[in-house]
Length: 157
Ligand SMILES: [Zn+2]
Image (cartoon, rainbow, N blue to C red; front, side):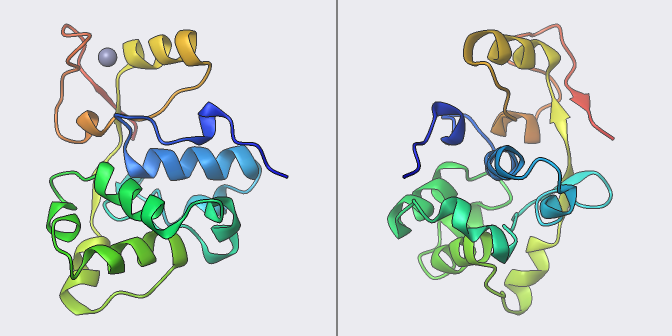
């Protein structure tokens, strides 16, 4: 039987890609190819990440509504049009967790990427308090950290 640690749960301010990346790395740390649906070759985040089908087992403990909730809770300015739309939301969820193919205009947007930002001050604080780090949704859109106001958010590229 599996037991799930706090590190395996989505954090309240976490970006979807970060959650998927952490879960995949915890399970299979030696296969960076597994991250090809999360991080693009240009070292950017995919705006709609995808779990490789053979790793679907990592999320098998989640119910369908829990998966939907994760996609909704990690909404950002780019994925809002999917998550606010009852027609697109189930499709986005199936694409993220089950490798479902998306059609036409919807699929176009999912190939877009955005730079990977992080705040070293937040990483240190997370590490000290929780023992692991995650990427915050806020870092997608701002260049300064709310907590560490003097700190420019770094870009991993
Ligand atoms: Zn910070």
